Length: 622
Image (cartoon, rainbow, N blue to C red; front, side):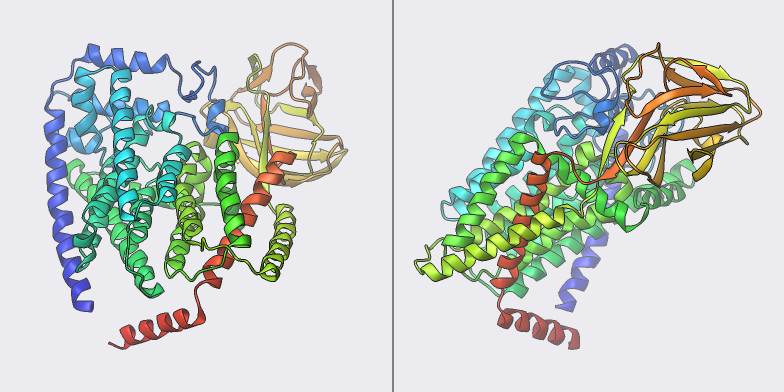
């Protein structure tokens, strides 16, 4: 076996090198296609009319970026689509080679938004399409292609599972929860869905061929390479997880759990190595061509995306991504699957299924991704919530693999009813340990800029409605690079909390979003005191008129003088998810998870686990 793995990885490095050369050539050829500047401006103007973060199901341009912080699953990231269009329609500088253009991909982007660490493979498709078609026409073609491929996938899984309508429903549930209207509108969402579905179609159509001699690993390796080439770090895990689940589902002959677990681990390693290596290859090529340290830029980006303020924040990243599935149509669909699970759990005979442990490992991959890349998935949850589709599909596969034969033993049924009732009580208790950030703000209110002298002290009366705060946001701007803002929370004359923030860190005039952990008493009056320790005047944004749109904020003063309005302000409370519906949703989610864990480990016998330990030991001794 070791010999086969060694042979595979040797061939993989050859494939990676060849793919790198082909991809560089394709990018160069794409940029040789002439693109008129007038056409470029026309496309950008068309996209700007739709807003930066509109919703696919509501046809109006948002007045601000508030949808970026929302939990609507149909939010479109047109800000990234704009970058994709800019990069795809670049005009080459005089004297610049096409190779440099293809490796930099940032000529017209604002400073700080250069992405030479990415491949930008979408350029080879978008540039010729944008030359011929309007944006709406490309979206129509893209949505049509998605529906066609998902339909083919449904037919293939129907045939491979002996006519199982449940598995067809599983495929279409996956597509539905991805929000088809958004997946067909935003260009950056196309890539991963198409790669995932095409890899799945290939594996199902030629399953017998790929099941032999580790051939399926080449499919997952190519999937990882294509993901690194085309994707803009959206929800890349789908291009491994979805094909892996369907490949195991389509296995007709029942084998030991170790067989399927090995499939998961092997395919996962092949995908991760290919995905990471091909991204690293782009950084190496860009560093050589541009004579810049793109590797350092990439390493810093990876460390930043993986950052988080401790274990609690990483768990919170998982929670806010799952919160998108509380969208009522999604919750209803998931509720139907939960009812099927409850029925089979209580009223059907449990049947041993050797695939369950493999499905469970795939389920865990989504949570691991959120946990590791905490910063990225917490900030961009408007689209990274789709990474949970891998866990959801694996969960549905477990449900469909549970026994269907009705259990006629009343005692068994009553015992399982009591078990479910107990687990339900336990799930309800878990709810109180969950923490969500309740975001409140006044950013939609008309505001004005107040320019105050250096050394000014801002005092804002503040009455929190919850006990714990995790984020405070406001707008300050100062040109003094050595300046700082000293922020204090006052209870009368006592300083409870104090933070010092460098002014240069937030000098863009945008919301200063700073993470705090303030434990306060709700409905008690406090004062937020901001000392502007700068050598230059500071711009402060406050709301217009005498209205106080944010109920937490009261009187505002600059150096003891009362000012009309209140600070343009936002804050996040760290509290249990609010509302009866959210409590029910998270309780049901925990219930479904715990029942699945019982099924997975209850139907994987001790003998099976012993076989896995013995095989692992024997493989290691070889």
